Length: 82
Image (cartoon, rainbow, N blue to C red):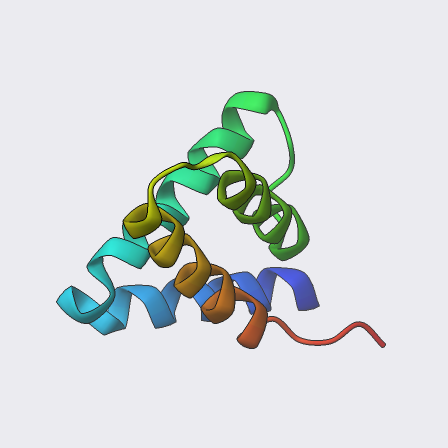
């Protein structure tokens, strides 16, 4: 239940940011779609790992910066494990 609430808060944050985080929202969507395609459950941890994998694979500095910003937001808005 806690994970679902955290995911809902994260999604709400990205959607409420509007154009200010348009690129980051797109990166988050790409990460989620990639996880779905792989059959991996959508969790904050899975999203974080997917974003890290994308950072490691990209050659584009601009894309890497957007991925890093997206990762920073996701990590910053993900509750710590107890």
